[in-house]
Structure formats: structure tokens, C-alpha cells
Length: 267
Image (cartoon, rainbow, N blue to C red; front, side):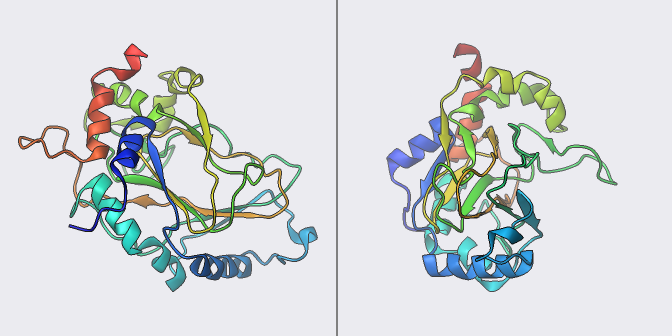
């Protein structure tokens, strides 16, 4: 078992709020290497805002060595063990796609509230992704900050505790699950609109580890320096188990069970 990275308070915060921040999860030097690669990929000049012609540029899956290093530090691996369970997750071989948000007067057009789906029930893939009550294909939602991110720098918006409103809406759909569009039609985003909102701010090298059912959203960039962030899933090694004879539930599983027990109905 890895040494404990997260305090008991942080684990409880993850259960109740749906996220916790690991400060300094990877080094600022690695973050700078990753930003340099991103700038090269965009074709934009970091010193010439006139070249920042779009509100957001999305890079494809980034698997260069600095990104792999960022995703596999001892601190993160230990936190994965605490939240998902030792041996219950798969190491990342890349950091996934990177949305780079620039200061821009035009709306990015991708800033609606949502949860991330992880699969499609049939091939070929079409329509919105799906999600089921065992969070098929996703053990964690993760936010990797590759640049310092203040309130005006388009930090991800998070609805605190919204992950507990999701399981009861998915339970009846069973193993098949439902599309994220059908989940939205259950009134999830209206029901969570009154929850407190937190901004995923922090320094380059910080990582937010989030429950896969957490409701979140992007926002326009109102600052001066582009924001670099990756939002990869942590993949599960096996499906989550919501009935364990030995009671050895991970915090992710415990939160799902709390939601199934009707937390949303009692709020």
C-alpha cells in the first residue's frame, strides 16, 4: 500500500464535496515543460496575444514524457490508492486532451454544466457519451493545472456535493446506464443549481481529484494569461462494486452508495 497522501479530512471532503485538491502533485518544472509543448502544438506565440485568435484550442491526447511524468508521481499514485483502492485503477500512459483557454471576447461555446460520460453502448459511436451507476470506464475525474489559475483565468466551476445527486437518477437504468443527455433530462442540473459553487483555482502542479459524477462546467477567460489544464479520467481496473461482502468500499464507491440511499431526496 502506498503511503497516505491525503489526510482523513481530505478523504471526508471528497466524500461530501465530491473533490479534493492535491497541492504540488507534480513539479512546476514539469508543468513548464508541458506548457512549452502545448505552445508549440498550438502554433500561437506566447508573447504575442494577437496570435490568440480563438477562445479555446483543444490539443489531442498528449503522451510526451513530461505529461506521463505529471500523471504518475508518487503523490498522485498514493492518492489514487486512497480514493479508488490499491490495485483498482490503471496507470495513465498519457494526459489526454488539453483545452487551452485564452482571453477572448467571444464565448467558448462549451461552458454548460455537465458530468463526463465514459462510453457508448454500441458501435459506431454516436451521440453523447453514456454513464451508469457504477461509473463504467471512469474511476475519477481529474483536473491537472499546468498553469497558475486564478479566479479570472477560466477555472473550472464545480457544484459542491453534486455527485451525490447522480446515483439515484442512474440506479433504475442498471448496468446499461443512460446517455448524459438523458441524465440531464432528469432535472439534474436544475436540482443542483442551488448548491455552493467552487472554482478550481491553484498553482501549476496542483491536481483536483474529483468523483466521476461531479457536476462541473468551463467558463470564459477574463484574465490576461492563457490557462493550461488537462481533464483526463483515471480508468478503473475493474468495475466498481456497490455490494462488497467484506465492506471494503473505496471512497468513490461509498459516495455512490450514499447517493443511492437518497441523499438528494433529503436535501
